[in-house]
Amino acid sequence: MELSIKEIISLLGLLSAAIWFYWTQKFKPRVEFYVDCEFFQASSDSDNLIAEIRFVFNNRGFVQHIIKHLELSVHGLIDESRIISNEKKQNVIFKDKIFDRSSVVPKGWYFWVRPNVNQVITKVISINKRHSVIRVIAGFSYTDPKKSRHTAQKVFQVPNNNV
Image: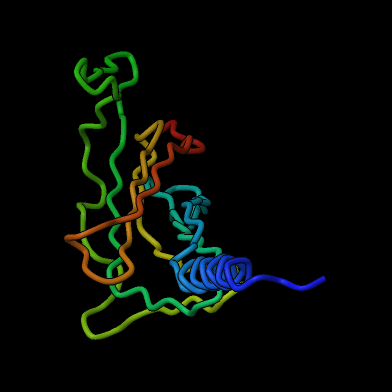
């Protein structure tokens, strides 16, 4: 079976498109990102708990990523009898600032996430037991923090919130 010039050109075009698609997809950022939190009680008579916040990166791509911009903000609810919602966004408003939005990565530092690796970065903060629930919002960007960001948000029940 002989192929005509037209069929060879069509096959080369199809092969080129497949290679281009594979090559461009191979180097795309493909990181799964979520947050988790665990609470620890330092002493039974303390009004505060230690919260270990975990930023979990699962690199599903083929390229190592450098994380220079990783932000965290933590807000809490103290009086859940007065839960207020933002009607426009339909979100519960957490009024009490526990950890104001700021970078977790020290200036001049960075974290890297290798391909096919589950990388966990932690931040330890103090939470007052009066909070019944906290909301953790985290975000990172691959390069420029002003262009695109990946964010994760999760609500956690604070244990032993009886003071």
